Length: 262
Image (cartoon, rainbow, N blue to C red; front, side, top):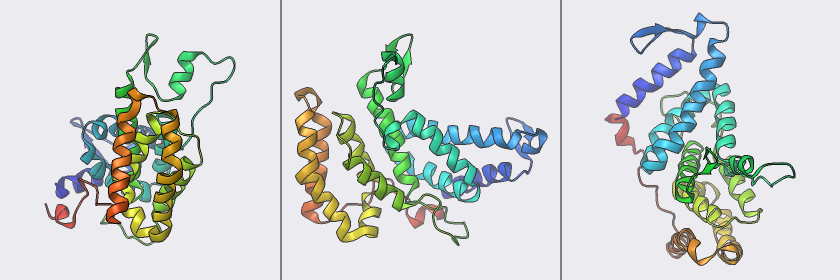
């Protein structure tokens, strides 16, 4: 509920502002240690990113409540935003977007970690589990860039707004696609913030959509094997429907004004 989200936001904001906060049955304050605030900034940013790969990966709708809190905290405490991006880019290089190249002297295990895979005891996680986590992270990022905490003062611009989403999309299309990964993440991103980008960029946005259909999807098809077709087909269907209807629907789970009265 909206009221619960406000409580969570206020508690985090109070903690970062140096006030005493009740946590785990005891009162804590960042002033208790000279590096207390730095530590809390770091851990909080890490927690937001973890929520992307755990909560949002399993429940897509969770992206919006988490993102609206993260966006509001970012606005008031810019250091959290810098650290959020650092954690996000490390866990999900595709959020930069960046596809790390295999360099001489890098072990395969280390390279897979650089690509975002979890490697435990020399065993690499399954591809579907990997894609699910990456989807969660991209969805959280796509939600943050379009959401603002509704109770802020809204004086300045969004600390990391839709222009970063436009840049991400443009950079993705300037890179050679990766089988499975590219189609999955483009669909995740456009499902979550396509509607907001469409409203902001209008004609330019639809030019971008046509470019994806005419030029980029054939490039994804060229590198996709028959076993990897699922994500590409879902992306194609989504794109065709949007181009036919000249509309990208509001994302499922988006926070309506009524939510804040709950």
